[in-house]
Length: 486
Image (cartoon, one colour):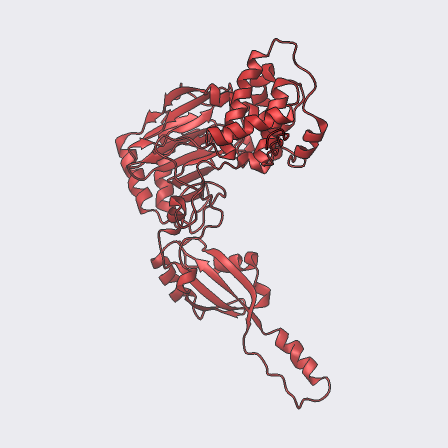
């Protein structure tokens, strides 16, 4: 209508919009004016056809560049308004908020479409047994594990308890009597309550081991429990997904998302704060205020490395002798992997931890070959643990239980990718180590991950120590001067 006042555009309400305003305000040192901020956001969303998370990233990068231009100017003022900061502060927890790890690109596939879910579920469809008539005093995971440990066949590792129901049904229950004397039914009910029986779904390493276990356990009397064992229904078969990190497979040579490299979700709060301090020095020149909220620092650091990617330093381990390589690969292909991974939160098809100096039932032959490799690489190394994986990928982490450096080797038919990446002693550097059929000496106490691979299977063997007597100071991520001592 002619002469009518124009109606102001509605202010954006997206959480990504408010997060961008907070970061941008901290970068340029002054709060953004509502109308101008709204127009910038709508232009990024509509004109450039960007979804909210992409508009956020684009605008943060733009303001990061502006902050560098303003670095020596006198336009720095107070930080963003208290009202806006208060609205955002509700999202900020100690350390980094969960949304810092959430990225909508690429979107995580649904479970049915996820390649990694398929990996976790593949393997041995019929390796789960149903154990019933479990008495109340044994219907506990710890107690049941003890029973399996003491009564299992020799040379076989304990199975994995997928699910335990303490009071699943009543075994030999006593019917309620309508003609009972006063108080008699109370006694019957009390007795009946003792007749509850539990049951469990228990997974073995493969179908043959489950068949052997069925013959071994069914009808066996252990600690007053006469075991009742049968095959579990189809819906209870398949590899457990417990303790596994599920997600889309990385492409060959692809790194996990940058934010996961910088601030791995697996780190405890104290290690996250140290990571923030380590990286914040790189952005000190563009910060409007010396003290910032943790998530703001994290976002600005990520913007820095998007604009100026970290330097990659190539390195390679020492080739394994052909005989050792052949023996190790053959034994790994024969390995019957545990039903559940021995380390939680890692994206791998299988994860096994062996203890040197102990009896590793079911893995004695593998342990012998592994010892041969260590005797060649460094017979004096105080290794007391060995991690063995199949198709490990991504999963940035720190091996916080390590007390010293470690040795790493990967073998298999994969033809590209699969490099071991380790954050450098300078945060703007990343070592890219070729461990394919090679042993490298590295320090897992720095953030590290594995790039995606293709062309075939990828096994890895990691020799490490948790023995305090073997402790050394963390000095460098990669030991390029490593030479086998055996």
